[in-house]
Image (cartoon, rainbow, N blue to C red; front, side):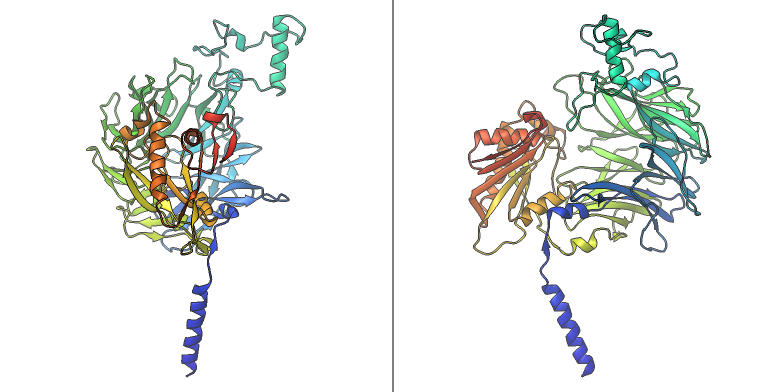
Length: 615
């Protein structure tokens, strides 16, 4: 009888816990989301590193936050919980294993500049390797573990003064595009001239130059200066350095001049570096092509590997056996009507090799060779998700490994399987392990599990429709988090920007916003209209010279279908969108009167203003 009572009591406790209503998603739940990234497996295959980005409250400030990123170490054999390797207010990122697996290089700020640090896993504090005036990032160990290749970024004014990267202090060969000047001599103020705002032209220029040096004025020296969220007044250049992994080592520049180099990778023998290089004869804002070059580790022996006047090449990735080079290529926008997405390709690692470019019709990223060099893993946005794919090399045959309903946000490959970060409706980000086919999935982290399990979530329902161009448009409908029988709820049409962005249940950025609106009692409908990414090149081109009528037809058709749901109050429909979607929202409220309110923020249509419209 005693055991029976205990059993009944335990059952009642279980039932009461299930009966507890789950909380709705709040605005501040955005600060609870922890994001897994930068996954790498140790050379021994026994451990793994990853970064975790969190949102931390600032001290003595209410509702003020900042992102912080720290390194975590995972033992793949004991399956113990991941443990933090770095702590504190300064973020740590871009981790890289040493070839022997005994040290980690990573990036952290020191005196307001990113620098590379070395952390011995045998114990002890991390020590600072670089003291770069321009900061340092993207560390890449040489295969023998003696050197680290890293990148720096410097501005035009810094480039003019640098005696190593620009030893002759020369101006670039291409025009700096100063109106009224036939050459670039205007850029450097005359020497030994006294600054005087009321003096000669030379003295006025010297006065203005001093204002610039004293940071009293922001001088814009480029035509393409306005980005989406800020202004970038000066040109900048990316260069590569090599440094010995020892205390007080002096870095040596690998590249020089008014170019930008990036995406560097070592060959397995440690003798050669591969890097992308922009067009050397054009203003950087006019350069539309990258080529892939190889050079010796001492900076000599420059050879072009991939170059095409009609194409640009990025993400050069060397296979583990050093025989093949994977890359992403697209048509360069040499004509106004040119629009293309990335295409994955493979070529032998020899000069002027003929590449094989896959006909896979999605834009690939995160290229990663399998351990045996026979296949290439990558991810690509597609049909509302970000699946993982595998391509056989060199045939170019591609197979999809994960579903459209989730997103693989980062991954690493070993001969034993894969580690990957996944976003899905049930959890915005966790770390998982699987076999090489991404099967037999096992969750390894619990960064978001506890708080998400206490939240009531709304799950989207996928639908399709045919537009007037005969294209299939995917859209999703989300009910309010709580729906009472017989009650009507407002419907929100939410439009993505880009216009080549893509939304869906496997797209990470909108997890919180969608759940928050549903928690506020709104139903949501969102679609991927013509011009969206994730559906191939032709679909992406379908809004060419038609940013209004065609895409508006697609999203309004989705809204019309969603309004047929029995819980929708058709008299309370609203619309919102940002960036390009701000443009489209403004277009729609000028052509359609079904919406009672609209909110749109758009740099392209309304000079960055956040406007609200109520009918």
